[in-house]
Amino acid sequence: MTRLHEYFSENKDRYATIYVEEGVLYVYCYEDNKLVTTVNCIGRSEQYAEDAAENWVNRWGNFV
Image 1 (cartoon, rainbow, N blue to C red):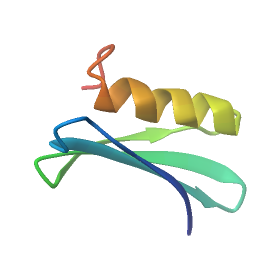
Image 2 (image 1 turned 180 degrees about the vertical axis):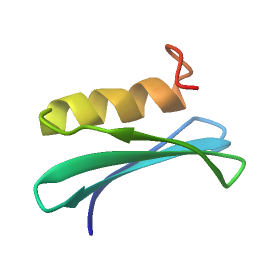
Image 3 (image 1 turned 90 degrees about the vertical axis):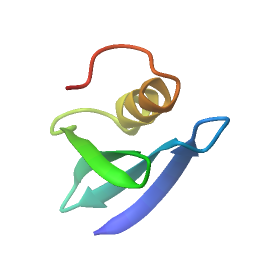
């Protein structure tokens, strides 16, 4: 896996990391340094993964 991007909330309690493996993007979403959910972005663009990561750290939408 190769890490592409990281996103952090303002107070750093949430962060998301985007990885790519064999052409598939994954967004790992953390809160208080614990993995909460993983977004599988199969068939989606890098922009989609970036938007998902940004939504996670800003608490926009429902992830769980």
